[in-house]
Length: 408
Image (cartoon, rainbow, N blue to C red; front, side):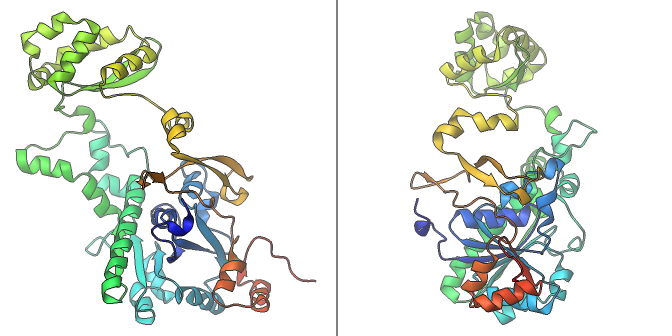
């Protein structure tokens, strides 16, 4: 797909974000064609240096962006930022409101100066009693019911991904696109705010509504009363695991016929899904015994031929070799720069693309995550700075970037 044909081509986004939620919003807008300029401090976004479970943050959520390294603590640095904002359609940030106000970069301050600018803020909470609290994904999972639903009773457990950060960034991007449509009608910008806590509440809203319509609290997922008779993980004889779902009477019949389980097919206690769900106490152990004699590959082949919903239990690192992702273009080759990798050297790898197509095509990876300040000179030139002006900013330590050397 030609970059100039992408939906948001020609849109300029100035991004002052770090970690996951804000960068996710920028990644979505960038993948859709926007020019996203990531403004980093001279030492770089701290996310570049994270290790452990945070080591993949920068590499994943900063592709298709340009990087400019800028000292916003100095008036000349703020002046550079305002030159950028004067040309921007969107300003995205995820810092504390007080910090943004001190810099004169709050939504109200900016929109008074740039009436057409769309400001999107990624926060812990929407306005209300909690809005000044410090929040993290795991914090809101605990207070928002998700950890309670994920772990077994008495053992709250966070989900195995930054679900609120990522989904919160998606809602920020959705809000931006809605604001762009509105600006097309009114000529005015608007302020978008997305938040971790409210995002989490949406994720557990189905359980809230379950209580509302039944009067019974939702049990944690490991202890839930399943609506389906066969909807579980089964061990295989080669030490692997596979998930199988037979959620309709037709699927149950297909399962029994394929394996020749005439005794189960004719058992009056198992005539309907609701009846089978009531018999899970003995039915599932029986199925575990019967399926446990097969290998994972044998069961996968059998379930595939039957058209039953199934899934091998897969680790994230195995997805690099997933045949569907490889064949469908769901992964793109990317180089993570040395200063964006905790390994301290450039890494050539693959990265998942957004899970969508436009006219049958995946949104392209135009650029990998940028090296710190890689685009400083080009971005400054785009807002009218001369080469001499840019050299002066470098020499004064206001900006920094790849390829700069102090003149002799």
